[in-house]
Amino acid sequence: MIFSKDITPVCAYCEHGTQIASTDDVICKKKGIVKASFGCRKFRYTPLKRTPPKKAAENITYTKEDFQF
Image 1 (spheres, rainbow, N blue to C red):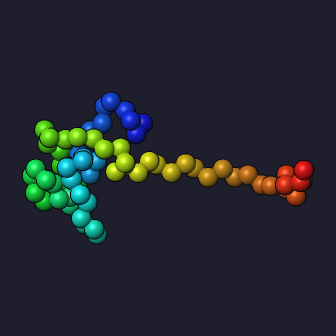
Image 2: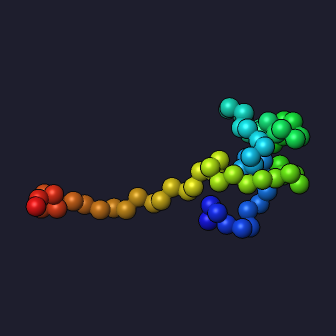
Image 3: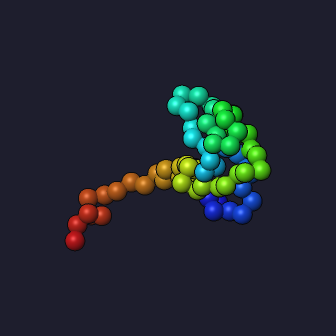
């Protein structure tokens, strides 16, 4: 889903934006300081700025035999 074609343009995932620490704002090279949910026509998606959802932890129990050869 990270490389999907139907990404909603938001400044949090744009190559022109840089997240401001401890706020919900982004410094955009094109528009200045905007909210992270803002989107404009200059949006360029950068998948490295996106954090994928964490997988649910599986409840697996291991035994001593699992680690023997």
